[in-house]
Length: 431
Ligand code: PMP
Image 1 (tube, rainbow, N blue to C red):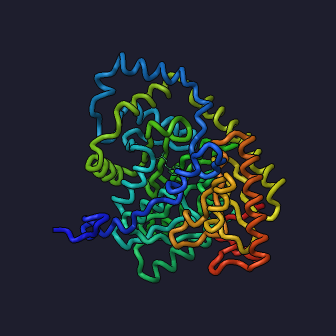
Image 2 (cartoon, rainbow, N blue to C red):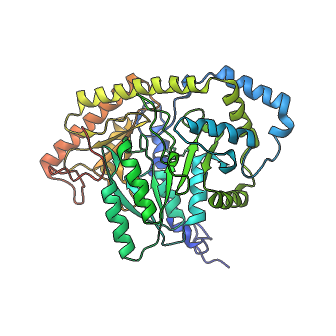
């Protein structure tokens, strides 16, 4: 008989791993940030207004009428072979030559993160990750009781010298490092891209230390200028598990992503996925396959890029106009700007005032496993209209001004983590 308490009779019964499962700061925020009067610069929702809904409706309609009996049936654990073949064409855009045999379709790339971690990480193993890192990946690592060790980034992404030092130190300490988790393109939340000249060094360092690279790439095709850089996986088929998704280039509601993995890893990912979900949604996969084969998906991605570029420009212009006391990264694609607050300000402490002023963001602490990052925050420009973005930044600037006045009058709150004049920023900082 569980002892528990009156609120939850099962409280003494949960597995130890549930202690690592906490509500993400973003989820807690959604309730307030979604009110219409709030300009939400918090979520990472793609702007689907650019999608041709009639064309999508035709694909889905045909799918049910002509192939309903298979599309609504169970499917293969590894994923539909037709879609896997199409996925290899998508990855070719970033220089990846791969066989559909090595693709595992997942329920969004979030499930791929879960499967890779499940297959590799025992409690106490180390995952090395950028500082800052995608909050959803940190949630997975924590659920599997990994120890996350952060490596700094700068305007050119992950710093290979710091990576070398960190891996050498961890090795000397006898720690087992299982994964290097990286978002090389248009980083969430850092807004930076791993420079072409650093890519070989990152791969070589990971290889020398026997660490598998987990390359998470939802934003690679959403660059604002030039061709996408070759993926890490393009030059290393053995040492990289590559994750992709249709969430940002088509529609997140379908929940279709994938992992491309070396054969041994691939087999284990399929087993782990079958144990978790039997098979990914046959219906969602057929809808994506139908869309890719019947629609100009490359042209659609171009339309998305144009939409996001306009929004990014609105955000950068508003920051220049209203927040000259802050610093921020200048993203070359993707959805996010990483903003450093003036000295003494704390993004989490400032959030209630921001929501009262009808603007929302994500405090930087959400993107660190060690509680740092309070001097920074993430702004997303993907969803609101350019006008709303400008208004949101104007409101944020008011909040920053009021908080600064408070600090000038009463001093910083104990534990406030502002960047300080020396610029001890925990992430990429470029104004
Ligand atoms: N990785 C990164 C870096 C992300 O930004 C996201 C979505 N915000 C995901 C993975 C998960 O995306 P999905 O499960 O929709 O493919």
